Length: 326
Image (cartoon, rainbow, N blue to C red; front, side, top):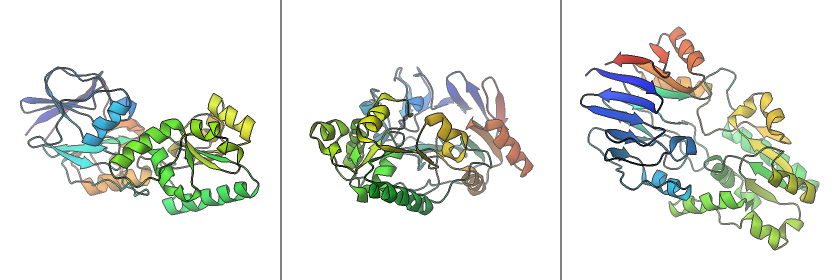
């Protein structure tokens, strides 16, 4: 069946049979079918209209925690299947009419978070945040080993350590991977961790930084804390450094680039991401084995050109572009 896909000012739109499918729209849509892949803020919108909205329960609950209300949603809809995306809790891709939209995706196992399920499809719409060969990340085991060595060395000097990662997704992975250090949580991380735990994710309970500081617990050094990703210029980081002489370790896929540490002002920068790295994106494409590929979000032109060199029919999807596919 012929359909059309286009990038609009409101995100990706698929004109499929007699239906209009909006993939991660930036604004609420009045009709058609909308899909919200996960609860990072750049993928959420305020719901409106009478259309069908497909999302996971975890996504709607996390959205509520972040100030967005998604009430009239479905987890199942005829001829549409949500696929685990391995990005954050509740993150899904969407499979319909032999088309697979990845949303944000990771095929790598990371602690409690299992890598994505990747279906076969004729058409693939894939993110390519790290779609350049320079972005190949170390293994999780190597990352954990290196960070444990850094923490151990700093503890030997009596230094507190703050692990900085995005408060939804990466902070929970860090909380799990380094739970043996009995970390405190930044208040914002604690809220998300508590919600994850309600969905059965095995994260240890701990107290937030405000309570820890008010009780004088941060005076008893060394200690470990999991906090949101923020720069060295942030007031919280400045306070922790000036009062407690804390050392920061920042986690991001962008740490694979030498520019990351300078830009964020962390004492250490570690490459860790909830997205596929370059090699994993190539593996994702091979697993899907599509006839047509559209690249979105990230190095869209570079990754599409790379795929063409590998023999795939691939193109970047940009606003005002439109194409037919089978």
